[in-house]
Length: 99
Image (cartoon, rainbow, N blue to C red):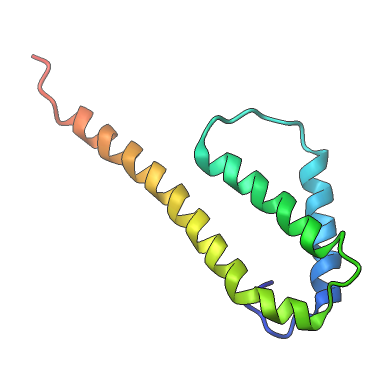
């Protein structure tokens, strides 16, 4: 939604409200990883700045697009870094000679 410049602030808040509601309906699962903690904090912060902010409009939407895409990119890199480490160690363990 952030990449599509045709999405208005109203469209964004309606869709984000729906997604946040589905997120909140899910049973909480405690995942103790930096990625999951930061993703949850990101969702909560973005929700407060957009859906719970009556001053949120198209101008503010345009102002926040680039910054929020950068934040999402940073979170994606954090996610990929942890999965890369797992794959690296898995491959290392498979190549060891235990005999």
